[in-house]
Image (cartoon, rainbow, N blue to C red):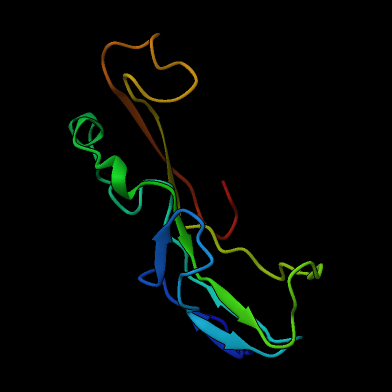
Length: 125
């Protein structure tokens, strides 16, 4: 949780794909500090306790969520906006999967595979 943030954008404030017709999750002044609580690339479908069976059930309509968008007051089309990432807080677990029919090696893997890796979020060990 960010103690000095002007705004918090929660993970539920996400969408799939880029579209300038999406309503802003927040309107902010230049220089604002924003905390983004983002979902992972599975859209939360894979968790620390997931199994290879969960890979086979992935709903590809809900992968790669994008959090936001943010409307910056005074910004105009063509403006370059500077963003500074002040902190990144990892979740304590991650995953790697081979998904048949998906990705760069789509044809190389006939069966799904999943590796869940856990680490200390504070030390990254």
